[in-house]
Image 1 (spheres, one colour):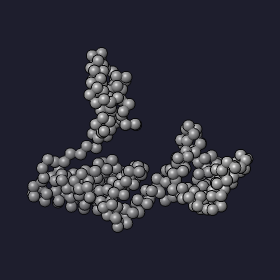
Image 2 (tube, rainbow, N blue to C red):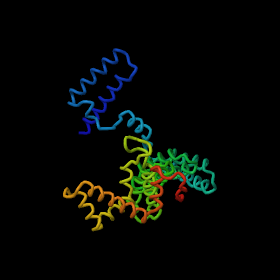
Image 3 (cartoon, rainbow, N blue to C red):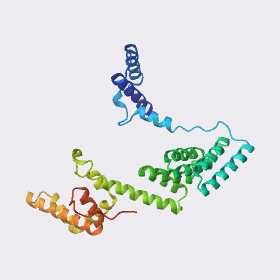
Image 4 (cartoon, rainbow, N blue to C red):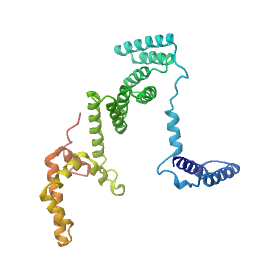
Amino acid sequence: MAEKGLVASIIKFLMKQLEDGDITADSRESLEVAIQCLESAYSVQATDSPANFDLLNTYKVAVENFITLPPSEATDEEKAEAEKYKNEGNNLMGKGNVEEAIEHYSKAIKLDGHNAVYYCNRAAAYSKINNHREAIKDCKTALVIDNKYSKAYGRMGLAYSSLNEHKEAKECYEKALEIEPTNESYKNNLHLTEEKLAQQGVSNIGLGGAGNVPGFPDMSSLLSHPVLMNMARQMLADPGMQNVMTEFMSGNVESNDRMEALIQAGQQLAQQMQSANPELIDLLRRQMGGNPNDPDPPQQN
């Protein structure tokens, strides 16, 4: 149950306070009593907390992203004045006066804080001055007001992409396409983001595998790369390769023959990979410690 997981996380946090916190003897005794009471009342232990869950960090993130809206709707007069500020902000954006535009959008929001368009427009202005975190916050606020506002998802995706947080950007573009499936801009941005994620997967090779030994490839990154996975699927669908693998897996051949079959399978895979995507293989070879005199691979735009 979620409640037990939460209580277990609280117990884990309190126990960490006992270990690391600079607390008095009386406070320590109170914490120990509190831990015992929670364990008894909910029949949980600190070890029941979800793996890799940091309660304090989660709280900090929640506070940082906490969104509050004005308690009441704006009057008709306030809405009309807010719309004027928004239009002026749009004109200022067209002239390149981004800072002034942000001021006007902020005034519109102060008058009518329940209009998602104002937050989304200000998000676009924040992105113009590379304040992408504020842009993301404004997009999130816009989506609290209107969770079907595809433009807010799209602009938030752009902000995440600018921060090289491509996983989050991909999620935003996917949600934008759920709302507006025919939008070509969202489709293109999603495709570019997926390419960035694939490139990140390749560049991670050699940075984490085999007990973090420098230069040793991270096999999970290698095997999850979409291009390599597709090559492997095509190779394994080949009848000749299936015969090789069958011989390797069977116990009816000598160990030397089985090793020869494995080497043969590896050579065939390498040849197919080289033929299908030489640039990718060249990049992999350098990241795995290839010839330092090799030229750099072509740059991607």
